[in-house]
Image 1 (cartoon, rainbow, N blue to C red):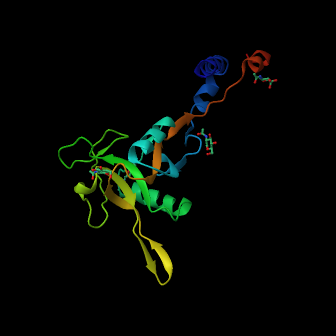
Image 2: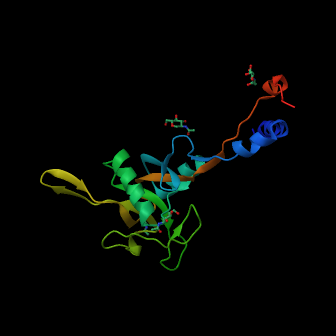
Length: 191
Ligand SMILES: *[C@@H]1O[C@H](CO)[C@@H](O)[C@H](O)[C@H]1NC(C)=O
Ligand SMILES: *[C@@H]1O[C@H](CO)[C@@H](O)[C@H](O)[C@H]1NC(C)=O
Ligand SMILES: *[C@@H]1O[C@H](CO)[C@@H](O)[C@H](O)[C@H]1NC(C)=O
Ligand SMILES: *[C@@H]1O[C@H](CO)[C@@H](O)[C@H](O)[C@H]1NC(C)=O
């Protein structure tokens, strides 16, 4: 509801010219409902099995896109988060793919950007095995314990199933001191 906010803001500005300046100072960042802040973005893990296209559609249906990767710092934050919330989830779809590309260039479908940072798993990429990119963690047994390596990119057939991660941008808010209209009319303004 932008209009009431603007009206309110105008009233506050008129009545308390001094306050407006102070009140508009603080900016806070928040994530949409059900998303978690990880590095500079908001993430949501869906661990139901879907193919790449179904996963992409699911993210779009909640005003998000499939995961893209920017750099090592961000990947570390993502893998730490995954290890915390889903310690047994070895494979998730990203938005990375080379669908419709003659060359082996990968793009992040959610941002439209060509993928520059591509942290491959050992032995990857294997372009012949598919057109889409998943984050895969190799799982092994060590002294009777299941050990999961950090997630890295792996080429996968887009029609196969995996969990997926949706990403949404951080929402920025400015906090403002605001009076409602009835409170405004009741206020005594010093002259
Ligand atoms: C958040 O998740 C719950 C449980 O899955 C769901 O019922 C609810 O609709 C979700 N909220 C939004 C805004 O997507
Ligand atoms: C990675 O990206 C984040 C978010 O844009 C940025 O703040 C950070 O400086 C980058 N780190 C490196 C090592 O490039
Ligand atoms: C992906 O899997 C489908 C179904 O098994 C198959 O028809 C298709 O050729 C595969 N695509 C690639 C690129 O391997
Ligand atoms: C506005 O503030 C007054 C005084 O606190 C309160 O009684 C009234 O319910 C508020 N109106 C709305 C629409 O929030």
